Image (tube, rainbow, N blue to C red; front, side, top):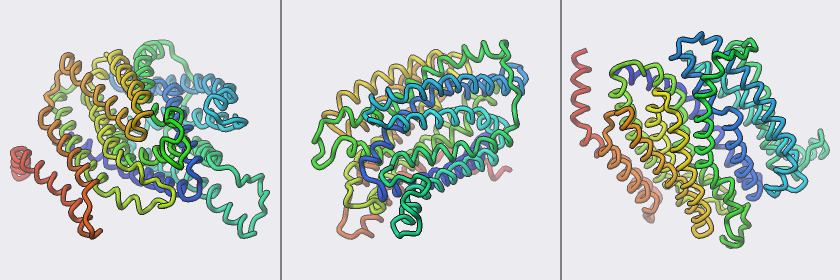
Amino acid sequence: MSNLKKLAGQTAIYGLSSILARSINFLMIFIYTSYLNREVVGSFTGIYALIGFLNIIFTYGMETSFFRFSTGKNLDPKKVYNTTQSLLITTTLIFGSGVFLAAPWLAEVMDYPNQAYLFRWTALILSFDAILAIPFAKLRLTNRAIAFAGAKMINILLNVFFNLLLIVWIPILISNGTMPASFLGYNLEWGVEYILLANLFANGLIIPYVWWIAGFFRFSLDKEILRPMWNYAIPLLFMGLAGVTNELVSRLSFEYLLPENFYPGLNTREAAGIFGTSIKLAILMNLVIQAFKYAAEPFFFGKAADKNSPQLYAQVMHAFIIFCSALMIVISVNLDLVALLFPKNKGYDSAFFIVPVLLMGYLLLGIYFNLSIWFKITDKTNYSFWITLVGAIVSLIAVFTLVPILGYLGGALSTLMCYLVMTGLCYYFGQKHFPIPYQTGKGILYLLLAFGLSYAGFYFQLDSFLLSFIAKNSLIFLFILVIGFSERAQLIEFLKRKQLR
C-alpha cells in the first residue's frame, strides 16, 4: 500500500500541475471559438494534429530509453543524460531543417496556399519541443515533480499570455483607436498564425530555464551507450508513429474525408473545427492519463526488480480503471453545462454526442499504457510496434470508411475501435510473456457500466434544469455505490490494516 501511496502522491503533483495547466489551456478553446471563426478553429485542429504526429519523429522514443538506461543497465546516469540530449539536439537540427525546407510542399498538400510560413513556424515549435524532452524527463526520473510541474506551468502561462495578447488584447486596442492598425506589422486577418506564434514564443522562452533547473549537459555521443539505446528506441519510434496515427489521423484527415455539404451550412474545414472542439472536451481523460504516465513510468521501472511487482501493477491497474470510469461519467453527464460556455450561434455543441465515445477510447489508451509495462521491462519493445501497427491499420480503415458515412461519430468510433484492439492484443501477449494478476472480469464490467451510465446521463433531460442536473449527477453516486459493494472485501481488509497500524 505504501508503494501505491507514493505513486498516488507523485501522480497528484503531476496531476495538479497538469489540471491547472490544461484547464487554462482548455479555456483557450473558448477564446478561439469566441474570437476566431470556425474555419480558423478547423485550421488549428489540422495543423496541431500534424505537430502531434511529427513530434513522435523528433523524439523517437528517447524519453522511455532514457528512463530504461538510466535505471536498469548499470550505466552512469550523467553519461546517459549527456549522450541522450546530445543525440536529440543533433537529430533535431536535421529533422527541423527538413520540415523547414518542406514547408512550401506541406502548405500545398494541406491546402494552405501561399502560407508556407505556417509550416516553417511549425518546424521551430517541433524543434523546441524536442530539445526540452530529455531535461523534462530527467526531472521526472529524479523525482523532482514540483520543479517539473512549475516549469510546465510557466510554459502554459506564457502560451496563454501570448494568445490573449495577439488574439484578444491587440485587436481591442486597435479597434478603439488606442493602437495604430499597423502596430509592429500586426495583421487583423490572421488567426491560426497567432496561435502558432504564441506557442513558438512560449517554448522558446522556457528553454534556458528548463535546461538550468535540469542541469546543463556536456555534448557527448558515447557509442557504447548509443548503440543499445538506439536498438531499444527504434521499436518505440514505430510504436509512437502508429500510436499517434491512431490518435490524430481522424483530426488530420477529417476535413479531407468529409463530403461537401455533409453538414448543412458548414464547409469541411468548419466541420473539422467543431469535431476538434469535441475532441478537446475529452481532454480531462487525457490529462489524467498524462499525469499518471509522468509518475508511473519511472515508478514502474523502479519496481521492475521487485518480486511482488506483478501484484503491484495489478493493483495500480484496478485503481486506475475505477477512477477513470468515474471521471468518464462525471464529464459525460455534465456536457450540457459545458455547452453554455460556447457561442450558441456557432453550433459547437452539435458534436457533443461523440464525447462519451472519445472518453472511452482515451480510457482504453490509459489501460493500454498500464498493460504495456510488460514489454518495456522485458526489453521486448518489438511487440509495441506490431501492436500499434495493427491499431493504426484499424484506425485508418475506420476513419476512411466511417467518416464519409457517419461524420463526427465515424471519427470518434475510429479512436474507440483502435484502442480497443490495441488493449486486447497487449493484454493477450502480456499474459503470455509476463503474467500479471489483473482483475480482468471486474474491470470490463466497470467499463461497460460506466459507458452505459455516461450515455444515459448525456441524453436524460427533465423540464427543470436543476432537477435534470441532480438526476444526471446521481448516476455518479450510483456507480460509486456499485463499486463500493463490489470492492467491499478489499475495503474491509484495507480498514483493518489501518487500525492495526
